Each structure stands twice: as C-alpha cells, then as structure tokens.
Image (tube, rainbow, N blue to C red; front, side, top):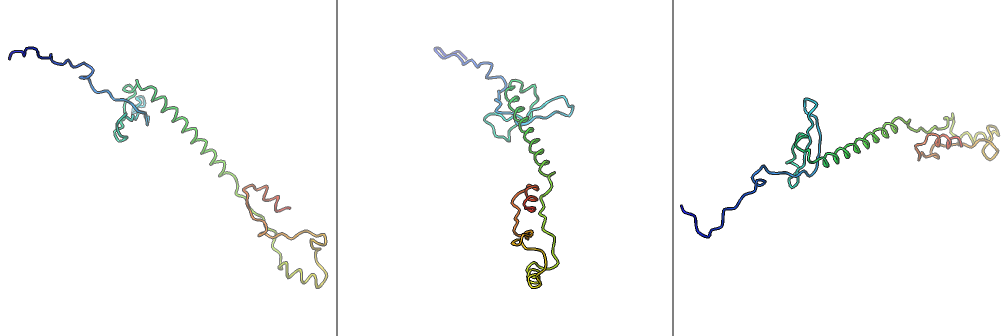
Length: 157
C-alpha cells in the first residue's frame, strides 16, 4: 500500500501514556506490620475511588506519599493520647467511693408520740426551742452532690 499524499503523520504516543497507570494517594487510613515484623504496609485510600477500593500497600510503594504517612501518624498519636486520657479519667472516677447519706439513728418511738408523752409527763430532752439539739429527718437532706465531705458536713449541721 502506498502512502497517501498530503496525509497527516501518525500521532506519536508519549512514553508516560503507555507506562503503567499512576494512582494518587488521597490519605492513609491504616498501618500494620507484616508477619515477618519488619515490612510495614499502609492502607491507602486512593483519590477518585470509593473507600471499598482502598488497598494495603508496602511502604516502598507509597514512599512518595510521605506527607500522607506523616499526617496519618500524627492523627493516630493524637487519637491514642486522647484514648489514654479518657481511660485515666474513667479509672479515677471509678476509684472514688460512692457518697453515702448517714441518717440519724432510729429512735424507739416516733418523735411525735414521744413528744406528746414527754409534754404530758414534763420529762425528756429539751426541744430546739428550749436549747436542745434539733431533730434531723433524712427526707430533709436531699443528696445533690457527689462530694462526700459536703454531704457529711450537711448532716452534722
């Protein structure tokens, strides 16, 4: 077949278009050591691909994405620090004893019945109006604090 006169030459395809396809790293989402304990693999989320298409790649294959590895490791360290802090706070909270309310000792007879019998006989302890100790009732002291010292101070008052 003879060449066609005045025809455009055949296009030249550049080498970078015939080489393997390049993928762009969007972010690193995980890191693990291989069974040998030496080879590190990173879970790579590829740009313009769904999360389901993420792959585990050896560190050597993503060395050009050093920025993504650094961002991932910094975020991972921050997450671990916060997790340790929450665990310490939880342990400190759980180690505190629960506050308890101390109720006055139970009396043999109800206060009202005793008061009427004392008034009739003119005996007994002096009342608060007469300079005696005030009578406390547990229902009059609702617990609205977790501070044991504050509860005990309220009971003594």
